[in-house]
Length: 383
Image 1 (spheres, rainbow, N blue to C red):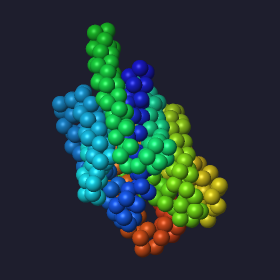
Image 2: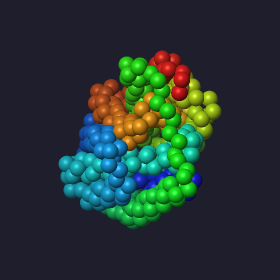
Image 3: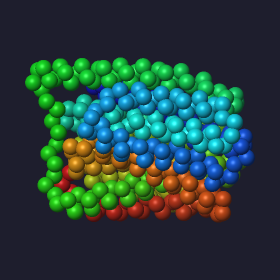
């Protein structure tokens, strides 16, 4: 638990900094006179960079572990945050966002491996503890942006460089703690128990992986509509201020912390496949109602949908790792990378649609995305 708690706090600090990017979109849009498609490209630069590097780094570290990778990744994030603070052009904003994506790519595969080793057989709980830090951090970003960056301007992002330095120190300490713990277990003869690989044909494993990727696409495309455009939607439809829209985005994101830990614990008890189809398909009626609701019920429905969907990723990730249990870094990097990449592609595509159809219509179309959760019934029931 000390290792998992430290990883969770490190995840919180890492994702707090990452979430500053979408949180400052209204400010960046006005400063550089951007349209929604250009806003989507910022998300694309950040998330696609991360998605391309994560599987590669996971594959490499499966063969040659690099425990201090998280520290190096946070250094890239620090450079990206400073670049965003003092960016003088749209091109520099894109480059700085890509640096932050690089930091994320380095952090997640190694942190996933460390959480896996520290799980003591309760993979759902371990991933829940690890990911709750990420959800809390990702939800804090918009709140900090509303309180600090929006009133004081883009340059105030540099004030958060101290958070990056603190994260680097914590990550270094976490690596030392994990290595010390594993040495002690080795000396006492204790071993980390890994689940046996399921006896499935390669074709069936590939089919299950394809279904998981499609489910992840559904989740992240719907979530991208909120993380990138929810504030604009609220401002356009209800005329709220930027600060109020950021607070409502905070509400949407913060409940994910509770959903992810509950989903991990439920997955240990009732099976990953059941949690997956509940978390992906469950928000469908809420999503369909949301575009027709008033301001109050828009906030309520968004929070409920976020809570239900939050449990999906940890169950999808563990299900995928259990399919290929000896490639933790590769699978962790692949699915974290896909999570970022699919979200980035969705954000870019939704930006183009928003410029043509308007944000209200985009949210109406996105309401049907959770219906892809029906594919979860095709997953093997053995894991």
